[in-house]
Length: 208
Image 1 (cartoon, rainbow, N blue to C red):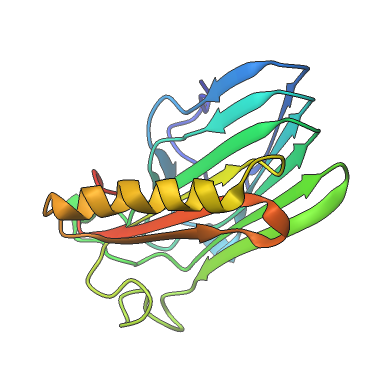
Image 2: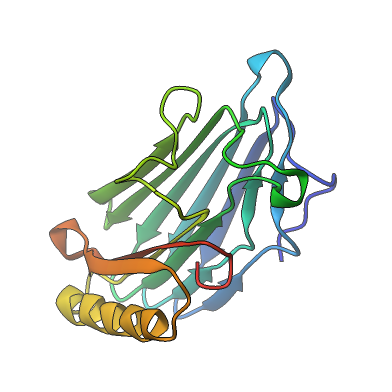
């Protein structure tokens, strides 16, 4: 469990976390509760870097609780995944629109999430999400629309069949949609056989 010493992440904070999973290690990494990003004073940006370094045959899943960017917050998160032969990694993120109980919906200033995946030192793919509600509302059609919560998951396994991973992910998402949860979801492969990625947009947190 990753636990912050304060109740939230504040503007100007610099957080640097590194996890080294050695040969054939299995690790489940999560947070104690939701990560709250507080209002940034003087446009100071909070930043977090998470480096997951997986040795041969290691398996790591990084499944934090919901990320809640509060009104006026500015936050950047960089996740770097380095994979040795036979290693597998699952990285997920759930993003809330803000503190809905306080009437917040996309009232933050800027939210940037970037994930870089490397195998044997070679860059396979980079995923980047950037929301700036004051410039373009995430609620626009073609982005999140009427959905409030965004959930993403990447299953990274360069030594496995990426198409099979994507098909299995898409089948699971279709089953969730059939339950009438009100969300939309899709899955597909990542470049250079890095693995599969699933994304879901939902009105509430459970589906995401």
